[in-house]
Length: 132
Image (cartoon, rainbow, N blue to C red):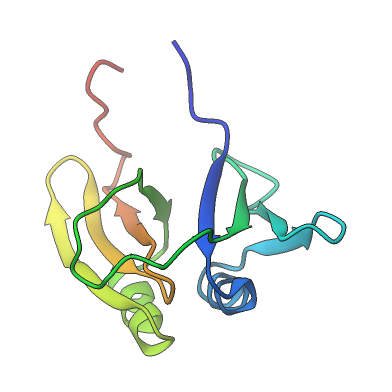
């Protein structure tokens, strides 16, 4: 079985997303030399993966357009607070916060460059994972 080991976000203006995710989620970014690519450090303990931020090679998706890539979901302490903070910092609503039985409270935002990212406060006792 193959597990996800890395994710990437694409940015028309990388510094805008670096600032957005640093403030919203506390992520750290490290540029690879002079290349338009940054490592994303999401944490150093617990479950999770790190990722990368790449210079977008075209126009960002139009608001309301269908998804054309995989999305990531990030655990947060309070979905409603994180969702409101994201919207206040330039994100757009993708799917408002809602309770998902056996999963937790979940919402999706469209970041300032059009990437869709999920925010999740897991249900007490953890998520029910089919087949786990």
